[in-house]
Length: 383
Picture 1 (cartoon, helix red, strand yellow):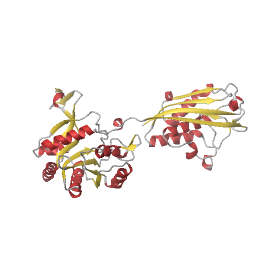
Picture 2 (cartoon, helix red, strand yellow):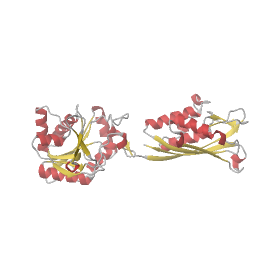
Picture 3 (cartoon, one colour):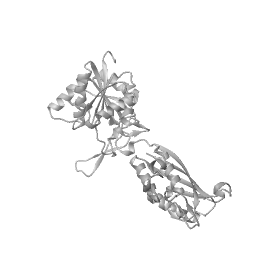
Picture 4 (cartoon, one colour):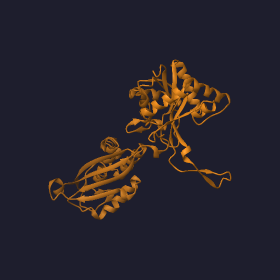
């Protein structure tokens, strides 16, 4: 309850996010293991000033929104409604739902579902300004220099940036003010870029409230916060007669090869486990079990390509990988450059991101006794 009236937040989450790309709309992508929309909803659910939350989303994601609210404990979620052809249609649908579900509401905030970093300070200050003046929006001063294209379409003129602001959300309104602004816009066939434009056009002054530069809208991949992960992998294979010795996709002359279900490329196996581990995708035994005949004798480079594709599908890029091969014999240094090229080409990364080095165990242990080869890999990935 705020100033004796209930307050609702409409979360506009019906966009397709085509500029960011991906298999689902951007508001459902994970940020640090949690859907972007869940983070946005929590900001409003945790604010004492908010009583109700109405989410408007794509029709096929209505059920998904309800599941997110339940899974992540969004207690103030009142309703989820389907959006319309444009943002203005979607918010209008939410306003009608709000009127039906929460008739005692006096103030409403409208916020982009793809702005998950809004602070409680901004939410509170926009609400206070809206209660005082009827309409308010968060905004920040423009930091870049501006130029205006002249009428000839070729030359340009400098603009005083101190008079300009970048508009953010939330935008806040007395509920009746926003409803009248929408009714006027629809009656005249007008579609605006945001709710504040509609209020201003209907004759209601819009108060500017200090936003925050961190309150960004996720629009392109560059807007997504970087998530960095590290993974490690270890593998060992015993020598076996009558087999080829394959390391890093290179056949190395030697009197024995390594025993295994596939080509037993211990170097690549360690690397695959490191990559899968960094992405929390399990290990090679889970994806390519040695009980499956389709992997009998298969090139580990084929499997490595599949691992790279799995990471790419999950949005991860490979930053770098460092592999240590432990072998008393044979010497691998003459083949390292070719191994790096093979792996880099298979993973579609620059060769400079792949490092391979060999070491002995000073004749200690099974490696020192030339009974087999071990490999350890460390990698970094980002999303």
